[in-house]
Structures are given as C-alpha cells and as structure tokens.
Amino acid sequence: MLADRYALEEELGRSATGMVWRAEDRLLGRTVAVKVIHPALGDDPAFSDRLALEARRVASLAAPGVARLLDSGEEEGIPFLVREHVEGESVRSVLDRSGPRSPAEAMRIAIGVLDALAPAHEAGVLHLHLEPDDVLLTPDGSVRVTDLGIGPAVTETRRPSEAARLLGGGSLAPEQSHGAGPVDERADVFAVGALLFVLLTGEPHAGRRSAREVRGDVPRPVDRAVGTALAPEPDERFDDLRSFAAALRASRAEMETRAVQRRGWMRTWLGVPVAVAILAAAAIGVGLWLGDLEVGGPLGIRPAQDPIGRRPPQPPATQELRPVAVEVIDPFGDRSENDSTAPLAIDGDPNTAWRSEGYRYPDGGMNKPGIGLVFDLAVARGVTGFRLVALHPGFTFHLAVGEDPEVLVQELGEAFTAEAETEGAVSGSGRYVLVWITSVVPTEDDNRAEVAEFSVSVTDDG
Image (cartoon, rainbow, N blue to C red; front, side):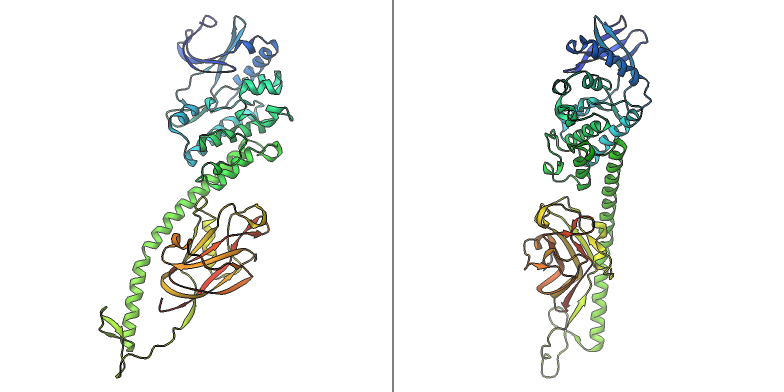
C-alpha cells in the first residue's frame, strides 16, 4: 500500500528506472497504474526535485494521446507516479508475439505517437525516454503514450553515460548518449524514428538508418523518413514531431494512390482483349473484301493466291508505332518507381517525361541492378528498331522484346547510352518491349533517369 491509498496488485513491468504496477485507488475505487521509482534514483534529492517539477508539468497537459498523470508522492523516501490505467498491449509485447508490423500499420502507430507527443512538446514537455514499452495499443486501435516526466529528470541530473545506462541507449539520440550538444524536441524525433525502425524490422536500429536494408518491401518514402529522423546530427532531422508526422502521412497517401492506380490499371486492361478481337475481325473482313485474303487453309483464312500459286513474298513494311500503354517494373526494389508518371513517356509530348526516383550513389549507381519500363504494343509485333527521347542524356539502358516482362529482364540486348534522341536497331518479336535502365544522371534536383518519349519500328508479321 502506498500513501495509505494505492494497493499494488500486479507488476506490469520493470526497467532501470523502476517498476510499474497495476493498483487499486482505494479512495476513488478505480484501477490505476503506479510507477515506483528505483531507490538508486529516488535517494538523489536533485532527481526527486526535478521529477516533482516534471510531474506538475505533465499533470497539466491536455494531450489526449498521453496517459494522464493523476497523482505523485513518496513512500519512505521513494518517489512514485500514478497515472490512468490504459487497457491495451505495449508495442514491445505485440512485436514479441507477432513480429514486425506491415509498413501501413507501422506508420499508423508512429503517426499516433507523434500526434500524442506533439501537444506535449508545444507545452514544453519532452519524453526523452521513449521505448516500445511506453507505447500502448488499446483494443479499439488507438495509441497511448506513457511514462512522461522521468526522461528529463534523469537527463538533467545524471552524466550522459549514466543517463544512457538508466534510460537505455537504444532509442536515445546521440546528444543524449554522449552529451554532444543541447537536448531538445529533436531527441524525441530520433526516438520515434528508432521506434518506427523496430516496428518495420523487429530489430533495434543499432546505428542503422535504412529499414530497407533489413526488409526490402519497406516503401522508399517511408525509409527516407526513417533515415531523416535517425540522422546523427539534430539539424539533419525533422524540425519537430508534426513535420515528421506530415512526412509519414504524405508517404501513406502516396502508397494508397499507387494502390488505386494499380487496381485501375488492371480494370483498364480487362477491356484490351475484347478490343483486340474486334480489331482482328475488322482486319479480316477488310482483307476478304479487298481480295488479299480468302477462305481456306488450316486456320480457315489464308492469303489469296494468284492463278499460278501463292503471290511472291514481299519484304515486310515497317512503321513507327507508339505503344498503347506503359508500366514501371522494379523487381529489385520496392516494386514502384514514380509509376504515376510513366504514361508521360508515350503521351506524344517530348517536354514531359517519366522520371525515376532520385539516387545519390557515386558514378550514376542505383544500389540495384536496374529499373524498367515495359511498353505494351497491344498485340505481338516484329520489332526492328526504336526511338527514345531523353531530357537529360547520358544514362545507360538495354532493350528486350517478348511476351513476358519478367523474363525479359534475363534477355537483355546490348547497352545504349541515351542521347537527346536515340535511335537504334533491335530484333525481336512479342507484345512487350522492355527498356531496362542501369544508371542515372544528374538532373535539376537529384540523380535520375528520364524518358520523355519512346516508340518502336515494327513489321506486321510479328
């Protein structure tokens, strides 16, 4: 019993800073959570005074996502904090039971934490001790953050090395762990970045800034946000929690837009076979009427014969053909690469272009074998050449023609270096033409590859 009021019933967890208990508030007849501070901290008057100050600030918060601080006190010289009891499960427990979360779920939880702590920051209250144990997921899916107040008290009254030992160094920003500079709200930005890394990978970041290095299906925009939040220098991180949340919301909106576009793409292509069948029937009818075709042969329709026999073979005529559709393939990345701009490569306007994502690797590298644009000719054709227009020449690419875009990645032809307008020969037959890009070049805002227009020379005897 604490303060003749709080009956401790069940231990919920413990750390270097103390123990958390579920307790009954005998005075008001309600369930609460009580944090009993470790005696090694509680015996320090400087820490106790600072904790009392932080407790008053936390108790005055109006932050719905933060578990409310209800009371504080001392029992035989040991401080304790009383907060509302939140029904739910900690992120640590969820990860231990079920492993990493999906990118969408991980972002949802991280945004919930950022939204919960932002009002606290605006009131001058930092967490400085955010761990997966401090984030609770309630049965209705909402996110609640606990344990405010202890981090600043430890940080302000202990040497950096001792504070890191007490608080746990996994989520601490370098300026906390090493005393490398002033500690401000960007330390909590770092901590949420560390939390998001764990949610995505199931592993602590351990100095790493890219979750994609551990889990390849993490979307690039999300990975960039994680990398920014985990920057060693505070000035390289997001300025505040709301900026971090805005970046994650933009990433989530981009993912949802791409999903809708992919569904729309599939619905669009359901009509292509019907259109092709109609065009083929019309072509046969015209051929019969002009006398170029006649009834007969194993397929029921054959080229018309002259009185002596079959007409002498004529060399196939070629024509320039603009593909009817184009799709991005990224089999070695996150399976998307500015997909929504791909149609600009066949819109007839050389001033608009599909643009790859930006890369900053040396010598035009992309940290993967390449990315591709698959151009659809609607039906199989004999392809003899191509024309590619580039706004920023210099990137390298290969071509292949066939029926299966995924297989074409293994059947690439010679390498070309893009010029402002590149024309070249290519030999193959099939419905699809793959342009496989293996390097990027500097543009106005990053290293990229851009295709403004693409067409092929085809014969009718594909």
